[in-house]
Image (cartoon, rainbow, N blue to C red; front, side, top):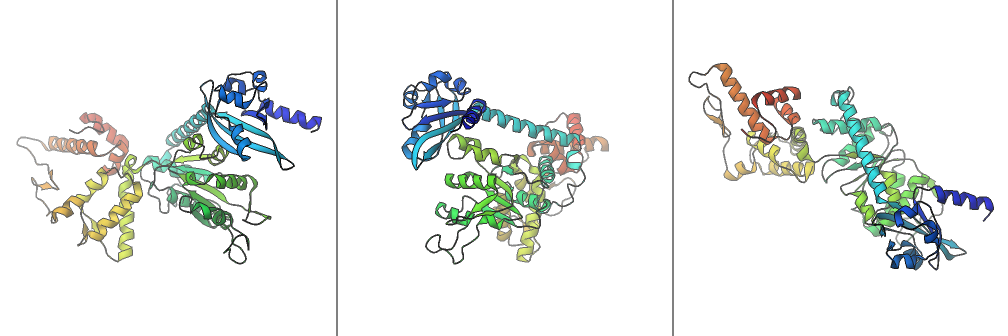
Length: 473
């Protein structure tokens, strides 16, 4: 190595944010970045005067990732606990010369730093949401121009839609987070439609649905003769099929580690090499990924690459579960009912007794569970009125129109009491309605949507009647 190369390498090690170790094949520590001392509890000089075997035995490294690479000759990633009690993510790579392993280079990152980055992301998201609300948020012109299949009546989901609309013209990678069934695929499709790539393909890949043995050939493609049974002429992989459009990788947390390495290289280089080929092909697509897992925890467990995590976590977007945005349920129900009526050639309606059941459930499976429940109810309804499960089980008939003083669906209809004025009766009725909704709905925004009035009006009325959300009576 020339003197210039040596100086450059030393500068990289000395100024790196990560903590570098260079270890020979015998385990001797040859070089350490200065910042490592604070994490591992030993000075640079002390670390360079020992071996990783000794450091592991003394509990400074638990375990030593360099020893794992020396043993296998392959790159490795794992979580370490240092002698100072810190938890770090370590990655190590073998260095070969003339086909022989000559050294191991490892780098680690204190998870305290990772936590700080996550907190910074959360802070930025909160500030962005506050900016939207100050600037009118959901009322901003342009949001309702083309929402496609999206149902975003709740404020929180309109803010999500507005954020996606703003980042759509860019090629920034979007990471969609949220429970299974919250609608990540629908939002990814709408992001694609809003983007300049909207006329290109949208390739939807479920990383957990492709067997690991087939994943490489399906994702990266293969050339003729790459393996037994390969199609004549080869085949373009899903990455190539997304050319000029959007590649949506759902359940990204299920991506095998080996494929994570190849995907990272594709993202960095902008090219893909088919299985069995030596010729790299340039590709151009927008990457959107989604997961219901905690990727940071997957990184800690060694199941997800730290560098790929950073590459994907550019624009994180969290979709809340349906139980936290019940205002969206009526729109989702109407949309699914319309689909079912069109599919089966009928014109069924939702019975009045169903709405309390729909709005009151927690829907752990979110939008997917709601849609499946409605389809089951639609198919089991023998008439043109879809009834709730309790009403269907009891075989109840439709309730007749009621006269004043009787009840509708078990709820009393207000009547004018002896000596009571109309104004007093209306105030009493209003309070009863608000009190009931306080026990059913989770926010003043949901109440405003249900009542057809503004949210400030709901807040004012609740204050006037001494009521609050979560309180009955």
